[in-house]
Picture 1 (tube, protein in one colour):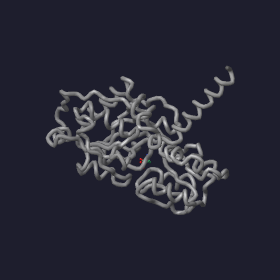
Picture 2: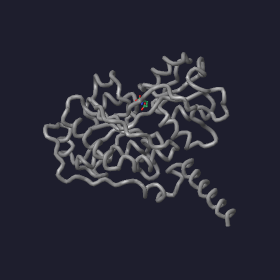
Picture 3: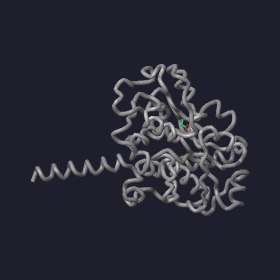
Picture 4: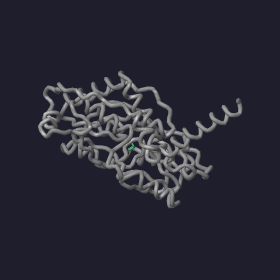
Length: 297
Ligand code: GLU
């Protein structure tokens, strides 16, 4: 009896590990989508004095900037044509409070380097995609948040025991995304060969898998997703060397809209949606749910 129970327990652990390792794509759709919360769409939403809101209402949909290559965070499932991940859920919960259901959202893929411009020229209404709140960016855009705090880390091939932290990659070939905080910080922490830069982290991961570079560096939350998608091949070093407070990027010229987005975020953190969304997305990459940071923007 005892043995049978032990075997059953071991099997269920294995099954859970398999789901965590394979992530959403490989798991049967019902396994993960069932746990995603749905958000009540407000029918009487109003944002007094907001140009962004008025224009979205007039066009009948919200246009939200997001990432498309970051598993468990902002990922476009090309086969099903859907977007999935924690950032996508954050985008949706805020949209619901503004009166826009999932069928009234158009996601636009915007890479790290193009975020400020796409927000300030009105190409998108807001942006949700591992977007660190920094003083330099606040000169150009406003933020609502933080809704999560990540830390910069390193992703390396699993058998590379010599990589233990930023100091261990001095003089090595490191890859990151153009326009990210990660590029600047790695140059500060460890003089590396000129950082190889691509538009996306997915492009860096390809170069790591083919052993053309030594490490990918960016937020641990992003790297854990890639590691979970490539079990047995990649690992996150696990020694963070920065704080990356994620915010929702909005226009600097629309204080009313920024306030409404921050209020919506707070409401969904308080009613448990944040935690449910986290567990059904980023939590599957193996990162335990952290404390929700207090909003400062
Ligand atoms: N959070 C960092 C940043 O905003 C790195 C991740 C990214 O590029 O999205 O630059």
